[in-house]
Image (cartoon, rainbow, N blue to C red; front, side, top):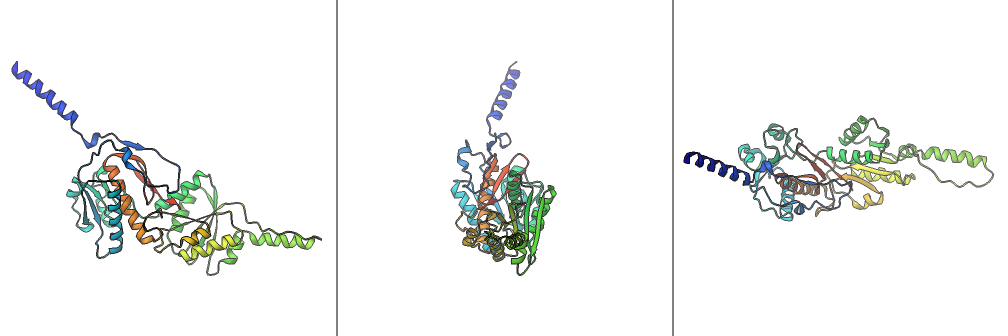
Length: 355
């Protein structure tokens, strides 16, 4: 009888102790609601979604070799540390070379990185889903990257939300940028339409014809000749699309082509361009003057329009922000510096900002 009572008491003790011990797998998710804003309006403040900080181990950051990628690493690490400070993250953050990554050690903690496409493809799926954020495109583990995909998603969503069926494409014949084929393939796969021209060394006449300004002038000349009184001439551009996407060779060509659209009375068109293929400093005055919307990360950070520095810093900042959220089971929409993210149980998607 005493033996039965002892085992009964022991069973109750075990059940009670198990039910009160916090388990990461049983943590209730905190869901952040979506917003429809495609513009940057600040990063998500995680503090209000924390009732308790569950993740107590360290974050391991697998970065490229510092000697080969000195500038990238410097600003990437500054971004990591800036997010750690902003969100008052108390966990240890350890930096290692991505080539020296120890998977067994990584699986005991939370892994941020690596960036190498080759290494990511080898380890994708070998890490715990809620204990890793890879920094190149992956199939099984959560990941973010500096690829064109986020920029494509951002513009595609914007146009879809406005129910746009036709747009204009201006492709620079001097350009070999990947963004042209990438976005156009996405656009046409959704059974949408586009009027496309290619412009060469002297794009002026081609853009004038593209906007139908030439036809407008010819119609005026016919009317003017047939009229006995003075005819007021206000050239009109074509109206079968309202958005133009420019695929330039470089930023200088972007400013030139956009200025010609505006010069040829195309003042009401929305002009878009991607920046994923460029590695220069953006001239904010030119962007403002020609009213160009850049699909990119937010420029509201300490390195602003200096693309190499700004991009690296924002990637580091968002990698730390997202990792901290994932480790503590926060899901839904998270807005970083690099873009807008949506996290659910099995997927992390991202899209850039419209600047």
